[in-house]
Image (cartoon, rainbow, N blue to C red; front, top):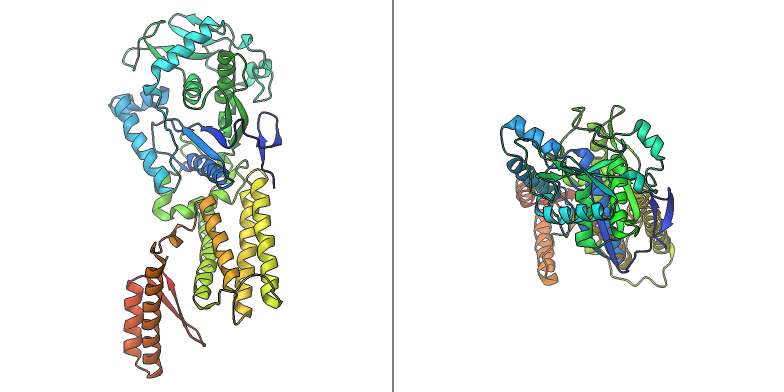
Length: 482
């Protein structure tokens, strides 16, 4: 099966072919650290976490860079409001960002470069753009001259005239063209500044990502990602300045963008005050419920946020957890049989298992279609539970394959982490299972004698230890509390 990715640049799905396989160079625009991250940010972080995890599952070696914008207009404004220095504010929210990333079970990027640590690199690239004739100095500011870059607008698929008419651009009499954007901003009194050939100032927002991505990943990337709202002007400007600087080398081969999170028809955002922070989400739901909620919608589509929808996602996830627990219970009593010479229920289950696995990977190879992949998971869940209900002697090899498949999915989606807490040594785990089975047998004998006090006491003590008992007509089964 071939992985295909929707490329914003071509507005079509393309076969994924990295520039230098098996290495994949991937850059995603990170946070501007002036406040706590919200669900809109989490949506992007989780989506690209799964992209990275799946590429690694396929055998690629992903070099993943996510920047930290720690000097910017919003940071300066918020710092002034709070009466602290911009550097203090940025440091505080940088720490909060990393706490959120860890809490959401997102794998940390290989490199998290900060803007303030790369000022010299930025000055060097800005000077290079001036020297090449793509930028000009205007009273201490430096602007990129969009008219010098004929391909400007190729990512947002708009002409320069269209962009001029309706785009979000900073108005300034210093500009030659309204769409020209700042590479370097002359400092104002009380603002952070660094010395430069054009006077004291600080970097423009767009040049920061170009410089840091090229420093750590080279002049050409495989994947550049971010939220849909960054297509213009941020990513459009990144392309212009990067390709102008490198002699028109294609900056990124694949441009991927996540859809917006919506609240009652409006985009979730700090400016509208309709956002819910990651911390607030984690107070009501665990990380996996939030991840499952995000992955239940395709990464390019908008997500409608309600608390009820996250609750539904949590309930759906619990159904999958229950299925995996059922597999664990059945494995304790099944025979490890080979999968050849199957017949009857075993053969039917094997065929369903193979079909469901194929559907999952077909979905993921179709531009990371996580909703379709999740649908395949629920089909497998149904097939597992039907098989266990109708067979007296389940095939251990088939159940092991189903369990391992769920664990692979867990690694790709960042789910099912609670099933990864078994002792590392198999003999230790076997001993624990035997001890639990012995206690369950002792309780069963007490129940036969109608010694309910002892039976209830054993049940309660096991519950305190995280072991749940379920009495059926035939026997008592135990499960680990998740």
